[in-house]
Length: 310
Image (cartoon, rainbow, N blue to C red; front, side, top):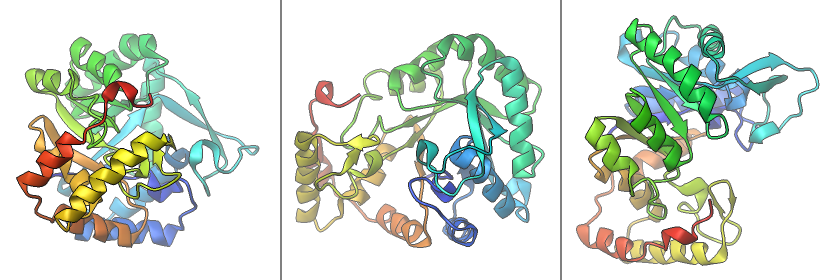
């Protein structure tokens, strides 16, 4: 089972994280065997890349793979407000969207500088849903050229929307995609067409957001689903799934974490722990053996996909 360390949480997502805690979390992930890391300029307006690069400085470059993203450029901004876009304790910078060819090249150059490295393996076009013309007409040709010239090994898209990922798979030569929150115990919107299309075109899939922002971790009052408060009916479905797991003496997050890996098109799940304890707990849940009977019960509880919040 392949696991990617998603480095948003170490950059202050939802709460500040100290440098020491961030590096300790990365060290624990490394000790647990993680050798694939994902970051983005968006995460902590560059802080994620800086911390990840610092951690990786003494690691042999051939011993790990690294992805970052394009689509947002950063600029110094003394007036930047802490907590913007959910990141706390970040540098005084702001973001501007840019999916142009020049923007892609500048984004890569800036990322390498923050990382302190001479290359990344994969570049994802980040959240292009409102900028699809520029992403497909300008960013994609630039990324394909970078790949064809050996600057990067692969490119693709990172998005929360299955239909956006499907367009990239159908209309470009993307090698892999990262889709967040759309292939989980609760949300199968990536399963309708996207995963079959990826399998057909041999595009590798990384699934992030497997806990649907926390609803599949703690399905109680006020729990979020895809970054917003979950509707009560969906909380009740998640609670029923939790009760089914409890009958097998298995925690709901264990099933949620393992579910996406059962699909042959999925090469990895992306986890985003911000603490050492969370890394350890995640790997403990991944080691749990889940019987077929539980998978059958969870499948029977699958909610109406047309009712899910967008």
